[in-house]
Image 1 (cartoon, rainbow, N blue to C red):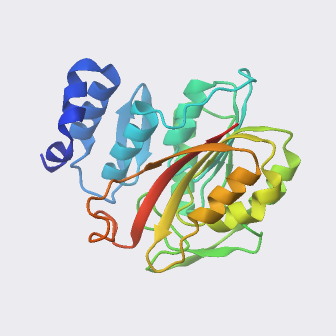
Image 2 (tube, rainbow, N blue to C red):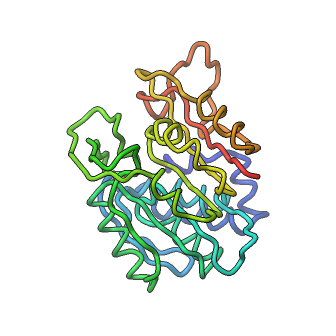
Length: 269
């Protein structure tokens, strides 16, 4: 009931007019109030997967399958190249495969536990042609400390028990690709350093999705990202992940006390 009350009147109106919204409401009511931070098997759109946090999955489903924020057009409709940085349990991978069944997808997931679930989810849905890299996308290959959160927000900037994990330098991979049709980057704050490191290797990227995270105890780096996108001849569109009323007063996100801003950045040529 709590989640139902959080849904806006506009969303409830769309329930009656839009089949995708109706499906989202069903997903929200079915899974949204399950116990958090526990593995849960969910069914949707013919897929069966395990998720690690019920509420995170609900909002993932809305973004990915209802609002289709990762939808893009490729000049190579047969086999576009997709880098999914921050693949989590695989919801985005399923969407990309639905969009382009023959896509060449590389999925990066830093959290070892979630990477194992990602592998099992793809296997359970008979998807065997996605390369999974259980490493953090980063600026070198020396490894990095990560703070898992039990959901979809594992971050190098987390305030909890950290674990040392392997890392992979994205710049090195971009150099080897002739073209990348979609570069999706949701890496919980590491995006600023990674994009700065890759800034001279983005000319072969056609579509670039970035979830920008602004942590209240870190210097904001949005201007760095936008400067690099402009230098690489991208146009971009920006929308907030969460709207915040009276930002001069409410200086922290309501649902995340460690951040004061999250943005979705859509960059394209």
